Image 1 (cartoon, helix red, strand yellow):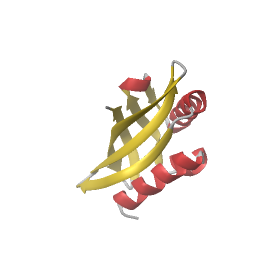
Image 2: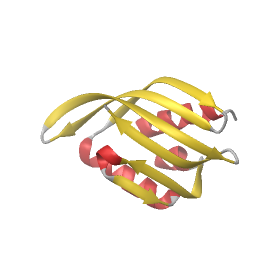
Image 3: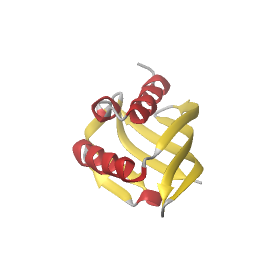
Image 4: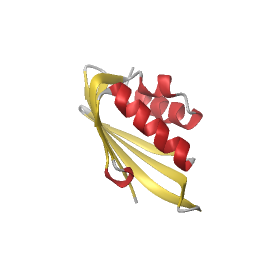
Length: 112
């Protein structure tokens, strides 16, 4: 499967809250960095738990805008919305994925 296709399926699974499907493409020892959400963890299961908890707490939703591939990197642009301090906020975001052997080895997620 092409990296862009896998990245698209990841975003779609996240929006469905299908955590098993979203994280099946990650390596067991992946690194997940998301400075704006204070997520910085190692390991697929830990990243899945931490991100699922964040989404459940904030009601975050994500809509894929565009995907670009360059060698072992994929960049995903998205629009998101979540609740912060009782207010619903909308924001643009970007995810940069580094792939190893067809799996996500490292992910950086940032929002605008």
